[in-house]
Length: 136
Image 1 (cartoon, rainbow, N blue to C red):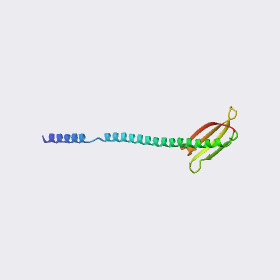
Image 2 (cartoon, one colour):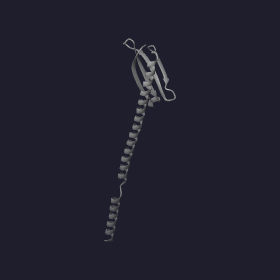
Image 3 (cartoon, rainbow, N blue to C red):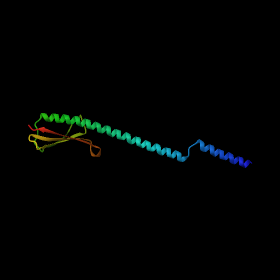
Image 4 (cartoon, rainbow, N blue to C red):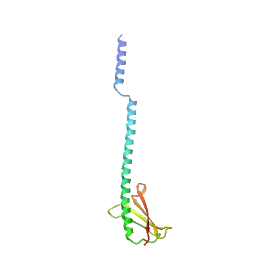
């Protein structure tokens, strides 16, 4: 009888222990789920930062192009085939431009292409603007 009682007590102890805690597999599965969620949140945050940088570049490059093209309308139009490069000074560090003048089939007009870049390599941004200007 004592032996049966000890066995019952042992089984009850094991059953009580199992019902009060988590198994190692349950804990590992929970950690895997939390890890996947954490990595997904980091990726979403990284994409948000990248999109904010792109948005800032597009806005800034559009404003710079508008000002640059406005200044060109005040100056004499160069000959077709002219290419120039430069930057926007200390106010916009890292922003560079490349401009090209090309002839068109419409007499009296030239195609003007302005490429604005920021940064370099794979992480750099580039925006191209094309307009047609009357030669004077």
